[in-house]
Length: 250
Image 1 (cartoon, rainbow, N blue to C red):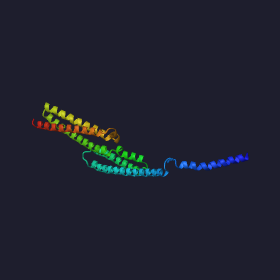
Image 2: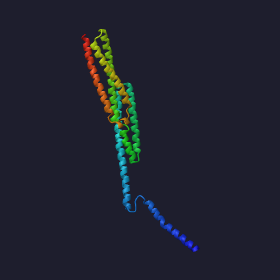
Image 3: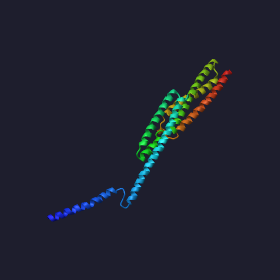
Image 4: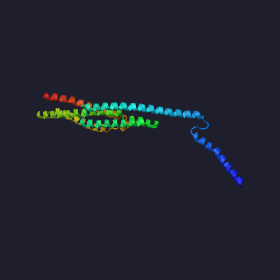
């Protein structure tokens, strides 16, 4: 019985000695199957890692360049906002703050991108340069449209002031039905223009990159409304000139 036990113990030790390296070998070569040439497999893995690192570096470099290009444009836009006479003081303050916030966001994104360790993270950050900020598709056009809108509002208010003076002159003439009717029509156009301007300003100031992402035509829609309003103001200005000329002939 003792001899049998000794033989069993010896056999167990022998098996353990033989099997342990085999188990170790499997754990070492898990990523490279036995059917694959080990050297070729490891070389391929090393090459893949190197290629991914190169792609990551290139992506970070291109992304950083795009961010810096936008930062330059935004700094120029800040100067445009402060220098234009078409924007109201209130809108200058609002737009300057929005541009500053965009600059801050892109600066932080640039830092994050440079610290990305995976291609997936870098791709996401590079994509957000466009979709998250829309510097060229939204912010730049937004400033220009609001400036045009503010200018139209000033013109409409000036027309209303002129209309009030003409009305006073007409009253002094003891009424003229034709001129009164024409003046009422022009006044309605000017008032409608101020209403349109106020509505457009509210909508334009509220625009965010997500609005453009969901509807690429949003800026052209507002641009068309401004063109229509501009044409209306031109027509009312021409009508006012005729009314003034006819008033003088009375």
